[in-house]
Image (tube, rainbow, N blue to C red):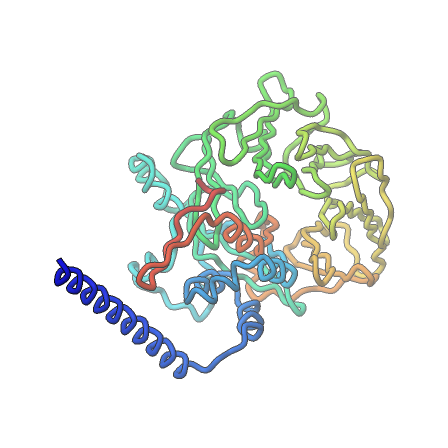
Length: 435
């Protein structure tokens, strides 16, 4: 009995010795690796990563655990957002490089490996193969973006192809038609390439409907808003909340307000805002995102064809053209606030300049004229400057949507449920918003 106890004790000591030796070996290897790699302070790494474009930043998340922790930290996401400007996205019939005079056609397998097909991704989770074969190849488009910097507008792309048209954007997410399901929609994050399909809502013709896409900061949920003209010529409204299963009808705006749906809604001051007439609109129609109630807001003067609304800072802005100047009015809230004329542009004005977006950091306001030229103005300046376009053939007569690209990273990071580390391999399990 005593001999058996001694054997067990010796075996236990042997196991402990082996374990201690293993720990020492692992620690020695770690120290050897650290001695081979020069130490870089975390602040230096963060300052380098903050300057990377969004797609490179997403790939860099999985270089090592240390980089992942830096990029996923709330401080980094907030800093990256403050340093990033919005862009304009659009459907283009060809890829950007194909419009370049120096473009050399690539082999078919090369394009296939470089471009992410939204429909092909959708088919992995649905039975839509027959519909995919019925799609017209010439209707295929590529999602590209237009960014502005140092007086130049430059075209870039997400390497995404699709057959559906972009309907709306919100916080770096894109809402577009699902051509594999009649009346269906798809929401995709162009950085993570995660997507979710929405069930069909009320079917209508495209010229008799409008889509809005907004984030409810109170509930923390994304809402897709569908306005459409019904058979009795009333304007009806239905809302789909991402993460739910069906559309929900809400009371629409008063009868007779909407003459057409050509103006895309603008999200600002907690609401989606529409200009309801092609010409001579005396008000805007607003849907509060939280309580889902419509209201009308009178404009300072009648809105003509090339006037428009954009978000400037945290306020809603109304840009209106006169014969000799352009006025910019600001509305800061929906609780009884009034329009205040904030700026006037007196030099270089044209009556056909449509306001597209305002830069949050630089403060520039971008216009697009009827003949396809872009101009910009700084809000503390009273003149317009013409922008040089690197590839103006790609942007002529195209419908643009505002895209806050930095939010794509924030959406990815905030909704990441978990990351597993095993044998130095990383796997993203799921994103709560796109399930």
